[in-house]
Length: 350
Image (cartoon, rainbow, N blue to C red; front, top):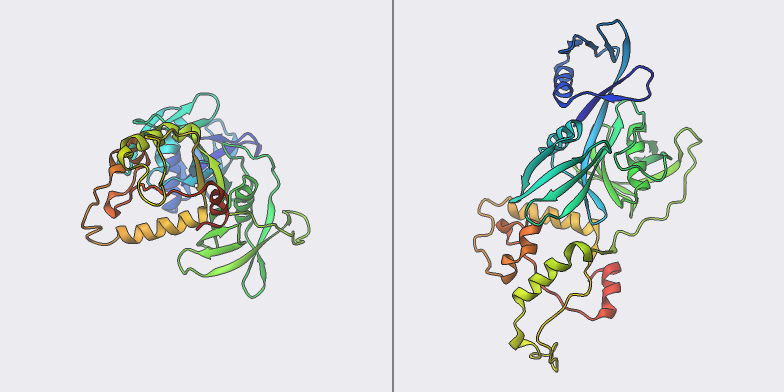
C-alpha cells in the first residue's frame, strides 16, 4: 500500500490521517489533477504540492509501505488485505484485531514510540511489527525498526549484460541486506521478483525466470562490483522462551509411557516421561518458500484432502497457536535423531 506525506523543506515529513491518506490515494489512482481536503487545503498532483488556506506550499510525496511481522528473527510480509489494518493502527495509535487461519490477533501501538506489536489473543504470544518503506521519488526513508547502517548499495541484474536496477529497488534491497535478511521481494520494471541473497539470484514471480544479481559500491559512487560472500540460508534459532511450554504440553499429551523402551531405537530406556530443556528451530527461508508453494498447490485442489488424519498433536495448544491448515492435513510430527546430527541437519538438511 502507499502512504502520503507532506513537508515544507523536504525534511520532517508529516503523515496524514488514515482517512485522508485513502482519499488522496483514490484521487491519485483516478488520475485527478487536484483534490480539496476537508480542511480546505488543495493537493496538486502534477506539482506534488499541497497548498494551504493561508497560502503556504508544502512538498508532497508518495511512500510505498509494506508491513511485516517478526517470525523468529525473519520479517515476513502481512497478506495484502491485512496491510490497511496495520496502517490504520499505526496512524491512529489505536488497537485493531484481525483473523488469519482461524487465529485472532491484536495489533497494538506503543504510544509516542511509533512501535507496533502483534499479540495472539489465545496464547498471548507477542511479535514485533515493522514497516519497510521507500519514497516513490527514490528518497530513502527510515523503517520503523532502524538499521545499524544507512548505506544503500547499487544492485545490478544480468540480462545479456549487467544492468543497474532503479534507485528505489536498490534501496529496498540494501535495507533487506543490511538487516540480515537472506531473501526479499521487490518490484523492478513493473515486474515482481523474489531475491535470494544466499545465491545472489532473482526470480521473476510471474515467469519463474532466474537471473544473477550482484552488489556494487554505494549509490552515488562509481559502480564498482563488491565481492559478496553469500549469506547462509539456514540457521539454528533459539526459541525456548516462546515455545518451551507449548512443546512440553505437546509431549505430555502425546507421550505413551508404556511404549518407552520398546523397539530398536529406544531399546533399554527406562524413563517414563520427558522434560524439555531447550527448543531450537532450524530456519531455512528457501525451504520454507518451497514448502508454502507446495502447500498452496495442494490447497487449490477443489476437494483439498478428503480424509482428515486423526493425529494426537492436533489437540495440542501448539497446533492451535500455529494456525496449521487442516484442509491439507498439516500437522506436527516427531522426528528423533542423535545430538551429533543436529548441527549437520541445520546446515545441510536431511
